[in-house]
Image (cartoon, rainbow, N blue to C red; front, side, top):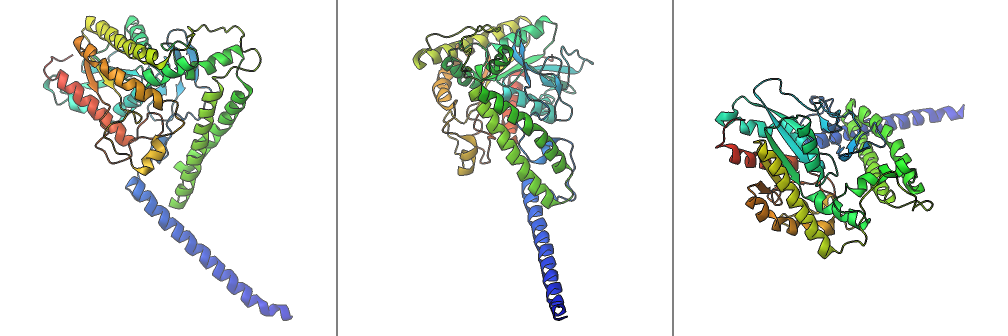
Length: 442
């Protein structure tokens, strides 16, 4: 019976513990509400709910949660994305493997539609998505009398890793099938120097499709991926459903604290996913220990001996300019205005001042691109006079991010935060409008 005298003390302890838990939960929820508001500028409980996973505050650049190998070899383009759904509402990887709301060739459904072709790599692809969602070019063109009431249809022929001559080839292929364009925008430069340099280092001709993209596919076709590459591929495959399920939970979180915890969890999963993708990029470029000299079912033009930088980068720049001139000549024969934009990149020094926080995101000492951009971009810029001599509407965008104090980059490659996407889209729109303002309606 003596033990009963401890019951009140136990009860009191439980009450205090419970009160502390409630207080801790309330403080956690309040802190999460403040964090959410600072990030999204809206109150969590009255937020505008979204089905678009991109709007959940987690950077999903390059993540396709439903697939393991998302690229497919293509006999003309080198590779394409596997046709299928995309996590962004209204978009899909269409019948030609390009991310778009439409299948190709696209035919106008009314006379007020203006078809805009977009060429390039992932930056151009992201520009296409941002333009479809925000209609910056459309709104600015509509201010011109000849474009009043016009609806822009964005036809993206851009895919991550594409570089010249892939823009030239994809454009001509679609034109040969009867695809109509009223104007064409080419946003490039980074892949031309960065990925062509990696090709050369791997003994592949610089103008061939990116070895970082096609060698994994040819490795699968030849059954010659290394053990490390296969193990990494399995980890990527295992991580995708975890990301997908976590995103669904994040989307439906009833409390701000749940949102905060799940956001951190998803970001960690995505970080691990990108780490494994980067490892896979490295491993898949190395031949297997056995059968490394086996004859491939895919034929590539090889580079032997490997070119020195002094020979390589002038060839890259000259090829870049020639490819753009050929695009211009084809479009000129079809009375289609052409606009060529050189994209900004963090590894090309400008007057932009990076915060310490952005430096951690935007730069990597181990980047395989840094040296190529520093050596290649100046040579691209030396070709500008040749482009303009051929009457190309060329616009140098390397410094367009210099004035923003907000973080503009989302990774240590080449991609932009929304503020960067907005600046690029406005730069493209202003460049196009300044040329077309004195020209008749398409």
